[in-house]
Length: 285
Image (cartoon, rainbow, N blue to C red; front, side, top):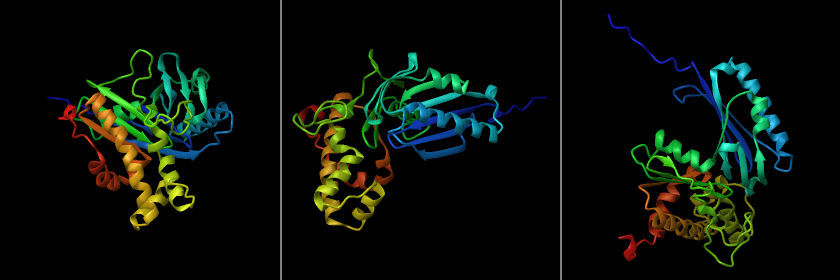
């Protein structure tokens, strides 16, 4: 008689950690990518980063103990970071938005006593969209992570594209204003200075002289047809569309996925972006 076999989805677990300029977010998943635990907390960017990682190690050890997860049943820890990654040497080469350069995670690996993997946050988000998300039927994807900066992940023929020096896809630091605003990277006029979360809040302040702290506040004003918010949003969408146009012309992807904090307000993206895109030139036909 046939024997019915079934995957034991809880035979192994994985830990995913996302470090942003403001928060640390981590999840524990089983073999079916089901989240069995998640936690989000703020950290002080002024602290030594070793302190931030030691706090993370303590929290992960606590969760593993609480969930009765043996290290032998954990396949490893994946770290998502906003910067240039050298995964072969477990190193974060440069991450200006969190103030790190040439930081090695070998000590973190020893303290966790688990395999540790590093990847750029936009790259890994693009890969996740391809296998689990909005782009499962496509092979060529660009993912935009719009937060305090703009990260870009590029998938070509089902593979993350990094090029030789691991810097491919840094569209957030392409120049759209030659003598523009100074960026954390050391250049001027970078796209992320005009199309990130910080830029949108700056436009609102310039229009209203009122400081607001987050996108939820801003879009609540936009939904209420606040004139300052709508003017700021129009300016923002102009710059966001310029960068998207450049990506389309450079890579001609099948799909562009917009993620990060801005993605929570997709109704505005759907309303504004199509009318802002200027792709009627001869080379785009």
